Amino acid sequence: MTPITRTEEMLLLMVCKLQDEAYAMQIREEVQKVTGKLYSIGGIYVPLDRLVHKGYLEMQDIETSADRMGRPRRKFSVTSAGLSILKETQLMEKAMWDLPKSVLEKIKLV
Amino acid sequence: MTPITRTEEMLLLMVCKLQDEAYAMQIREEVQKVTGKLYSIGGIYVPLDRLVHKGYLEMQDIETSADRMGRPRRKFSVTSAGLSILKETQLMEKAMWDLPKSVLEKIKLV
DNA sequence: AAGACTTTTTCTGTAAAATAGAAAAAGTCT
DNA sequence: AGACTTTTTCTATTTTACAGAAAAAGTCTT
Image 1 (tube, each protein chain N blue to C red):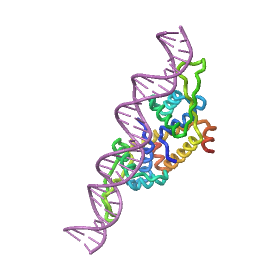
Image 2 (cartoon, chains in turn yellow, red, cyan, blue):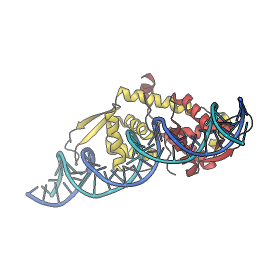
Image 3 (cartoon, rainbow over the protein chains, first blue to last red):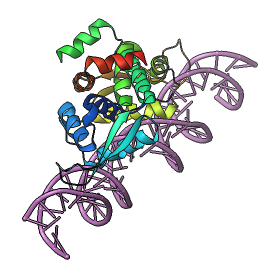
Image 4 (tube, rainbow over the protein chains, first blue to last red):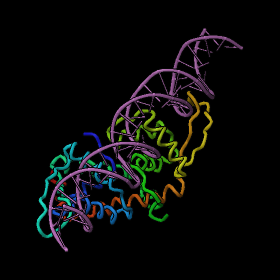
């Protein structure tokens, strides 16, 4: 299983977090909350589509109900392969940060 | 401060971990230990140079002492800007993984 | 001292991902 | 019908990932 990028990790996690509200534009907002940075449209849609293509996300067309305007949205959800790669990613991050305490301390105090 | 990639994060951390043994080829080995994957030569040198260029790493030429063969090596060390970006990265990762317990549980059990 | 040997670094080309934003699409509202 | 709202599609550019051959800079052998 080949590792995912940080952007991909973030998007998967935001879909997890948003659950029934995991629409692209909501995800974009959530990413901004977490990173403090507003991603461009392409910066969201391009990797989301890639994640679908890789089988880590599923997509569902949602019909516009009478209570909102604009083009119909697509809702995302994480597949079990997606959960699995997230777990792997988490373990890898943990391994990466397995450093001597003295080093961790130095980072904390910067 | 613009975020770094996962590869950059990993390399910075491996330099931290290896301390006085932070030579490119040692770093490569360490990366393999953590990820389970052997990176190509370019996969190590290219981003290391980039990190130097960005000011997150420093480089020092080490003269070959009589007890080893081969071309002289370059030793890397993390700058204070490097420590700082690592800290930011760590905080961002923490924010990303701030999910409902039910979701974290689902990931754990996959 | 010349040439074989060892190990690291330099270099460069290709593929993939990040980034950006204009234009199109698909609805609702007046 | 046409204006309006919001999302998605599309595509071009820059940056990063990935790969490995060739060059470099030493030591060792004879």
